[in-house]
Amino acid sequence: MRKCTIQTRRTARRAGDTEEAPRRGEQRGGCGCFIVPQKVLERFAKDKKLSAKERQHFADAVKIEREWRRAREANAQLAHLTASALPTGLTASAAAAAPAVLVFNCGHGTTLPGVPIANPGSSSDGAAKRAFAETTQVVKFYQSLFGRNSLDNAGMTLISSIHYGVKYNNAGWTGSQMKYGDGDGNIFIDFTKSTDVIGHELTHGVTQFTAGFGYSNQAGGLNESMSDVFGSMFRQWRAKQTVQSADWLIGKEIMGPGAKARGFTCLRDMADPAASHCLAPQPTKFSQYQNGMDPHDSSGIPNLAFYKAAMGVGGKSWEKTGQIWYQALTGFAPSPNMKMKAFADRTREVAKTLYPATPAIASAVDQAWKGVGL
Amino acid sequence: MGILYVEKLGGLAGFGGTRARIRSRGQIDSAALSATDQKAIDLLFEAGPHPTPSRGADYFRFRISRAAASGTESIEVPESSVPAALASCVKDEFV
Image 1 (cartoon, one colour):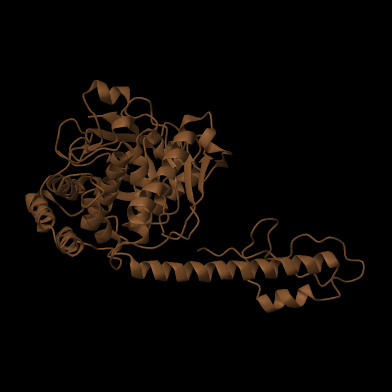
Image 2 (cartoon, helix red, strand yellow):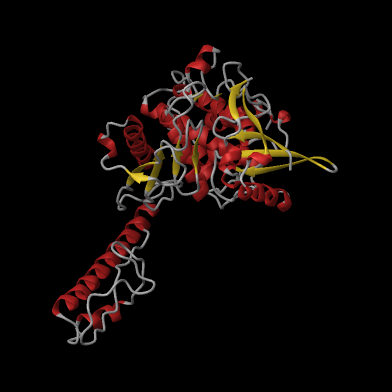
């Protein structure tokens, strides 16, 4: 839980003092994030030199601090108890409040986050409505399927900025928030239109807070692959699809009329990364990997491995294969320079650990990686 | 400084990737840039190789090339480092 302490002001008044502007280091309104020891708050709450109103202010601050600490301790105890009771790999975060989901309008500028949109879930702006609704669903996806409370597993507020730039053919994760362009109307349309794109961007946050894969060379390809894997998984979950009924396409709904007229159906195809219907065909075997490749290129190799594993295991991608990949991503120390072979071996081991009574699952994972040369 | 040749790379769609069917290229006469932007470009070249940003994903990178005494010199920088006037000289297109 991120702490936001109560703003307080030293108010040792002298005769003739008028209402002051915020002192140096303070902020007007809201949380100034000062840390005032509880004993100091209690002393001011009893200081007869202060007005009754000021003493009440400090007394309220004391009460809020006590309640906040009680809630934090209770949450920690609950998390510890349920972590002990849950199977390995699942985390306890039921006591934490759902994260806030905020949407901002950049108004075609590039200053982030932009202007806040009130009630984005009911906005007449389709992009605002989609960004809010689907981000909220991603929260539910990670919470209900993986026991994860927001990207940092601590209820982090999720911020999306829409209408970024002018005809901006991109969406991205800045390290602290998402941004979505409207597309140029030819190659691409509004980037909030693909649920897998929204899931993709948010998953970059999950990776940042867990495995911390870098963004170059093999680690970069794995970083991108995690986002395509969980982005596609999210799309399948939203549509209640099995691995058989899913199309495994990334970015299908953001293809503009110019792209469609040329026969392009997606950015990438996890089932057939080299396919000609992709705007950016990718390698399908590790022997095709080269250092310095764009991460969106090299991700084709682990993407295909996940597809093969999911098809080998069957059912819905989040039930077993997704659990293996999630544990492999989040259950180990940060590995910014992760190699694809090491990640492959990790999923092999996790598959055996999570499903010891079903060796066919570990076998499917093993065969999937062998199928891409790992 | 002369003509600057600019290519936008990466992003969610992987512009300029090995087999990508989309590219984004352009050029601009440095004389058309403001003095501030020209200075910014010079500083980017002087700084040498730019490290990958420590956070963030799916951002664009810009490869900027110009003629130099020794031939052509190129740098690759994240979009956050590129003056808007330079970034806007590229055109996204199918190949």
